[in-house]
Length: 94
Image 1 (cartoon, rainbow, N blue to C red):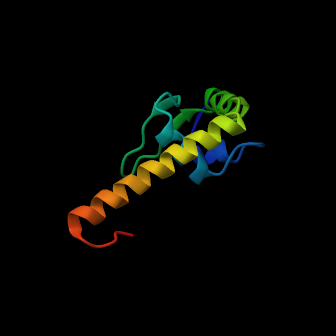
Image 2: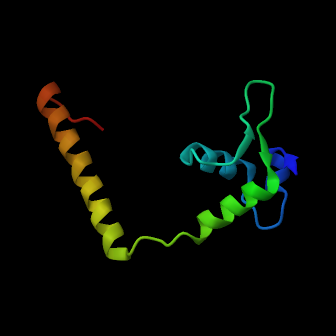
Image 3: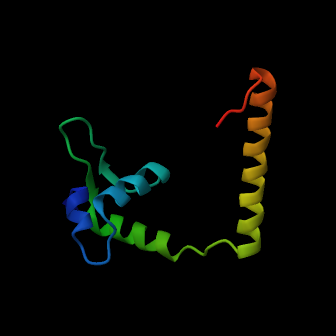
């Protein structure tokens, strides 16, 4: 059955419309029937989209140690960028 994102969000157990839009942006393989444009709503196969979202929620989470390492690497990368910016511009960058 074809419907809008709003129709999908109204189904039991589905995330909000806003959350679905964010998921669509992050997952290029989201099952669109038609992408929305100004004035035209996104259309999706409701059953297929529901299965897709259910699969995402069942994906295994990263192990805590792996997640911690990734976060530390990201933090170090951000610190390095701030230090470079400070060296180039002569002041702290927030």
